[in-house]
Every structure is written in structure tokens, then in C-alpha cells.
Length: 428
Ligand SMILES: C[S@@+](CC[C@H](N)C(=O)[O-])C[C@H]1O[C@@H](n2cnc3c(N)ncnc32)[C@H](O)[C@@H]1O
Ligand code: SF4
Image (tube, rainbow, N blue to C red; front, side, top):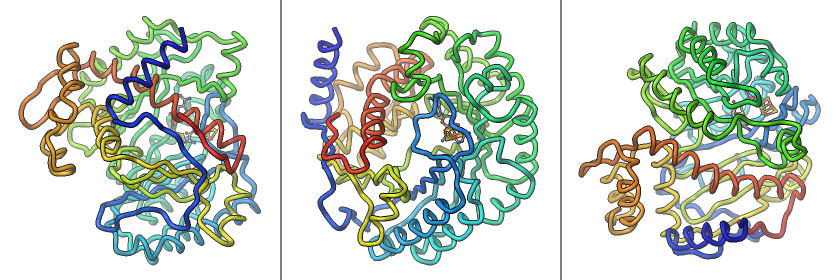
């Protein structure tokens, strides 16, 4: 059955991308393939945490001061290596993710200063952190650094879910953290929530959302609990020590979030996010092209995907001589178009004209079958010559497909790279 499913999946993706070989190979060049005429977002991965949450798939290690110092110096070297390539490119935004980036707030001041001076970056900065690491002093430092977008990983206001997932704060602290951040004028303040924890039902989700809307952040992002097979929770699930809510309950939760948050003045801005009408939605993942710094960071130039090594020690060592890129994958024009469409589906709106401007061709000519299929299946709220907008059912299906395709790919790359810092290849 699983073999049949992967056969269908491979057939479908080959049809859509015109590419049957989706494989990352070990990086063989000295430079990344980058067109300085394009716009790029920047990403900085800060892989330090004080706790290891059970569900977390990201590359991170326990925070140690001396390791953090080596990391900061290496990141600065990496940024300087990119300077000849990026100085003339248009750099739109900088997103700092992790891990828990605010653990090295002094280092971030230094790194963002280097990014501004060496790469000529002057755009807005976004950053994510956990309630456990928020206080007045840190928030004031983020404002000084030029942070316009702050995302707080609240996850839940139920102490029992926080506790069983290994979070190191209680509901009260999470509320306080959002209240502190709300006093400052960030362009967008987002909170991340997770739903469908083992043992969670609609009643608990409703309580979480009531607290969330009362705190009134600009954006609320609600992820269903992903159980990456290599994360601790993934292993527990395999041992059948944990049971997630059944699929019909998870579907009801998904629809509930849509109806509840729309009733409280939020509009859907991605398959997971809801944003106040007056605010610009902010996302860490939807740049057209981006360059990533730090161990485990990815870059996407339209021509290729790259991943840096997922080991701080190897990252620091590599930067004594060269870029710390471990893997690369060539991207055909059709795959680049498909990737663009994938992120527009994630945003739940497909702007027709933007596609023509970006790729010089008609989206219906390239992806007519897929677009007509989503209309036929009843996933579309409205479609005109400007844009196609997904409805609540479409969003639900896209998020299921996303789990099936994208999270599987992420899981494959991240699990191999966290075991081997320099893999020979990763076949998706
Ligand atoms: C790098 S983490 C956030 C920053 C911070 N370290 C924290 O934990 O609050 C990014 C976000 O991804 C979401 N996330 C991480 N792992 C997840 C999983 N297994 N399932 C669902 N959401 C997840 C969480 O909502 C989290 O806030
Ligand atoms: S969820 Fe956040 S705090 Fe927890 S281990 Fe992952 S990155 Fe660190």
C-alpha cells in the first residue's frame, strides 16, 4: 500500500514539475548560483535552546556560552563571504529563526550590524522566540535592533499540554509575555499556537482561542501538531504511547479555527495563519528567493536549493576555508514555477498576473490541469482574471496535502542531515 502511494506521489510530482529526479547531492562548488538582479530574503538560523521540546524537528543544541561565541564569529565570516555576491542584490527582509534566537541577543546586535554594513541591508527584521525568554529588557533591545515583526511561540495556554511537550513555562508566563510585547509598536505581533495535542478536544481548543483573541495579537498562527518520525514525539507515537485526536476531530478543529477567528476580526492569510484586517500578514517562509546563514539554514535561488551543514562544529570548521554548504539540488524552470505555486496555495490566494510577470507565461497554460482540478473539487471561494482564492475546505485539503508532500521532504532532509553533517546525497 505504502509503495503504491509513493508511486502515485512520484508520478504526480513528475507530471507537475517535469522532473523525475528530486535528489540533493553533496555541494561541489565554491559559490552559490545566484542572480544578483533578483530580490532575496535573508534568513539566519540560531540553533540554541534551553529546553528540548518533544515535538521539535528543528536543528538545535543546548545553549552553551562558549559554543555560541564560536557560532557568532563563524556567522560573521559566512556573511562576509557572501558580500561580493549580495552587495548588489536587492535584500528585502531578514528573518531570524531557530532555535531560540533571543538567547544570544548581544550576538544578534553584532550580526545584524554586520548584515547592514556589509550587505547594505536596510529592510525590516522578523524574529521568533519563546515566552520563557521574554522580558521588558529583551523586547526593548529587539526594538533597538530594528525588529518589526515578532513571533512568540505560545503553543498552548493549557499547562498540561505545555508540560507534557517539555515547554519550560506555564500559561501565566505566556500571557505575560504577550502582554509585554503588545506594549511595544511592532508592525506585526504574531503568536504561534499548536492544536491537536494528544488528549485535546474542541473544548480545550476553544479555551485556547478565547484567551488568544482576548490578548489580541495582530496575527495568530495555528499549526496542527506535526509528529516528525525522528522527533521524540514521533518515536513515542511509534511505540503507541501517545494517541493523537482522530482525523474527524482534527478536521472539526481546523474548521472551528477558521470560523472562530474570522468572527473575531481576523482574516485567513495562509493555511495556518489569521491576521487582523488592518495588518500586513507576515510569514517566515514565503519569500520568492532567499539566502540562509547559520548551521542548518537553507537557501533557494530559483536555480538551486542549498542546505548548510547541520552541525555547529562542522559549520565553524568549514568557514575557516569555504562556505559551509553541504547539499545542493538543481531546479528546473518548471520546478521553480511549481514551487512558486506551492507557496501561493499555502497563502491561499493565487495572483494570476504576478505569475505572468515572474515567469513570462500564462499560469493556466502551465498548470491548467491542477487549477481546474481544485475548482472542480470545490476548493475555490472565488476565481476571476486577477486571482483564485481558496475556501475553508480548500485550505483544509491543501494543508493535508502539504503534510503528505512537503513535511515528508523536510523530514527526509532534516533527519539525514542531523545524523550526517556531510551526506553524499538525499533522495526525496
Ligand atoms: C522554531 S519554533 C519557534 C520558536 C521558539 N523556539 C519556540 O519554541 O517557541 C517555530 C514554530 O513552529 C511550530 N512548530 C514547531 N514544531 C512543531 C510541530 N512538531 N508541530 C506543529 N508546530 C510546530 C511552533 O508553533 C513554533 O512556535
Ligand atoms: S520548539 Fe522552540 S524551544 Fe522547543 S526545542 Fe524547538 S526550537 Fe527549541
